[in-house]
Length: 251
Image 1 (tube, helix red, strand yellow):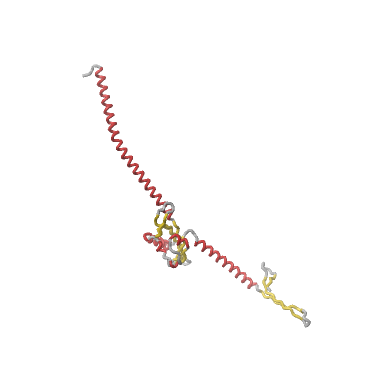
Image 2: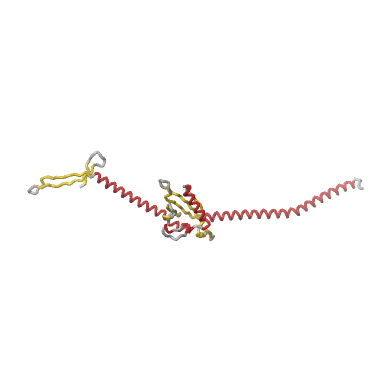
């Protein structure tokens, strides 16, 4: 059996004890012999192994929870190896890009990008690696996007971020990438710009109409005022002659 002896340590000393009775000729117990073996080291090893197993189980649970969270996160998550090929892609990335769900190693990331925006995506990834910094940019996808409010259709837009990671020797180990659907915000910005341009154009047309109308109104008004001035001058001249005639100076 295993027991603990009191000693100067808080946990005591673990020993393995064995007892063997010795009988006389009549079958009675004459004495008991026994031995003890110090198993403190074995006990500590067992406790350490148990703690390690519990810690590994906690790590496994944490990894499972993290994997479940990343798979169902509202943003697309892609992990690229040092060679640029994907090693992990979560479910949201497939939903955002419209790419059929498959193994990460079988996914061609360039296949979902709008052809005209593909060079920009490559340049930004190279910039993130060469300058060892996080790079974020906007790009279009081949996937079409439809606004549920008015049925407007256009290219789907995403915000992509590259975050390179390096090992202790300074070598590129992997690239973390996120993909966020910003199609609705891009459509809102487009709609605001369109309405602003329409408002500016309406203001320009209004000002042009006012200028034309004012010009057309000024011409007859100017003639009327001119005629009124002429009549006033003629009337003043007639009054002068009338006064001279009444004073006997009419010639």
